[in-house]
Image: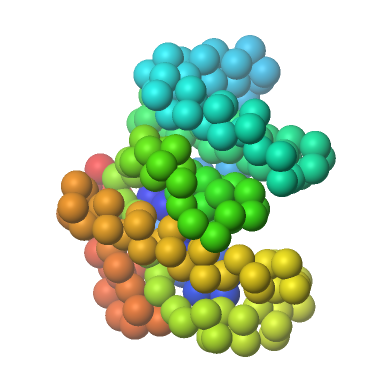
Length: 216
């Protein structure tokens, strides 16, 4: 089972996912929070190749976008690529072995980060195709906050992401991509999307997710 959280920085993804993990302490199922996997390299390679074979379209489109991406420098491109490969391995591992993976920044958030760092202000056709090919989690929790609140909350952080001049210029594009992801789920996977406004009803959300996991 895969549960992803997605939203603007400061929306509460880490906060609510940690609360969910805390509420699951007595759960007998194996819960993998974030990406704390201890598996050897051979198994990682196997899981990566298996995922690629099952998701050829996604891998092909991402490879084309990645190779044609001239905006990011080599180090940042490698870092984003590493993050996505890590998600691939975790996703495939949990699906194969029936584990529960809870991610405050899963597949959709990682691809969101990648696309906004390309530096475009509009979503290209290839990027739209990519968004539709990302593997669907069992539940995706989208937390919506205004851009002003996102900026305000990240400024108060002692650690973690904080907006700089470059990322502030990309916030409108980020919101556009989030709207496209929301639209795609509403049209194709409505019952897998949980949409929250400013973390309202967080206790009910945790209760429902706990019940969903216990019944898995």
